[in-house]
Length: 194
Image (cartoon, rainbow, N blue to C red):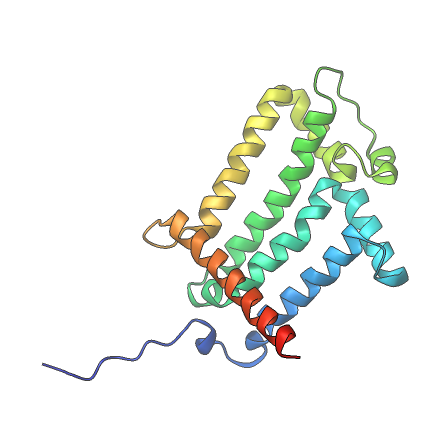
């Protein structure tokens, strides 16, 4: 019997080269985008990025910083399991369908209207993307059909993103929550120390 236990390497420990910096870069860009979208504290460049995100995808623009933070937390595991491309595609679809569902809700009970440039400039009704694709999908599926389709895609996204090989969705969400809580505890301790 072998008494020497095999040492497990973390997913992050397996990253090499620039990939070791990617989680930090993704988190930093996500933080910058959140400042761009939620406030005016990022200067002229930030105001421009925030305007483009809100105009192009409206509510979806508010989801982009959160999606980037989730990718930063899961990057090492995604690379190790070769799921990075699939998760990026699912993330883009989730942001896309956030705009489409906003369009369907905006025109609930009224006639859908195709005005992508107007919705881009006002950052309403799903913005440019929501108006362009939401209009077409609403004409094909109706408002309820679009909402059901978008909710299904967002549900698939959530389960795909957080489930592991054994399908333990809840455990993965709790683990990410514990990671965030642990990080905040360390930051709080560092602030109190100084």
